[in-house]
Each structure stands twice: as structure tokens, then as C-alpha cells.
Length: 100
Image (cartoon, rainbow, N blue to C red):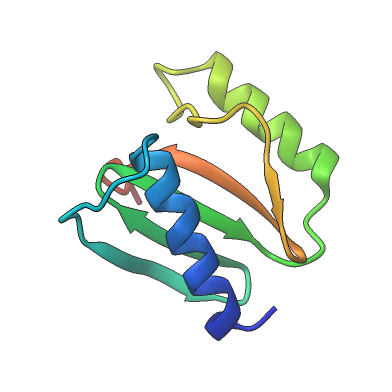
């Protein structure tokens, strides 16, 4: 899946996660990262990450479960499981300040 195809799909996913009801919004959307290993889009207070093609679903599920169980240490995801978007696994997160 190319960036031209992926970015609009991620933007729609982020908008849907930020706004559960169908309506227009004045929120901005920003591409935070567009690299071979991940594409990340922010909309309002939501971040949607498309993981690299070929990401192991079982390993990602373990990482999501760990993040959900350790909210004082890790940022918990907004959805407990990754969704499939084309050839990518996609996760949804609250926007937070990045750390090094």
C-alpha cells in the first residue's frame, strides 16, 4: 500500500476514532511520521499508527496488552486490538507528548 493510498485511509480512521458520530469538524489532521516502519496520523486528540507491512500480529497483540495493563508506565491504546487496513495493522492511541 502506497502513502497516497494509506494516508487518506489513516486520516479517515483517526477522524472516526476522534468523532464517534458522523459530523463535520474543524480539527486539523497532521502526518506525524511516514516511514517504511510506520505511518502515524494525528487528528484532534487521537493518533492512528499503521505498522510496517509484515508486522507479526501476535507480537503486536502482546505489546498492546502490555501497554493496556501498565498505564502508569506505558500509554494505553484506545482500542484493545489492532485493525487491518489493507496490508497494514493499525492501532489507535491518545495523543501524548513524545519521549526519547
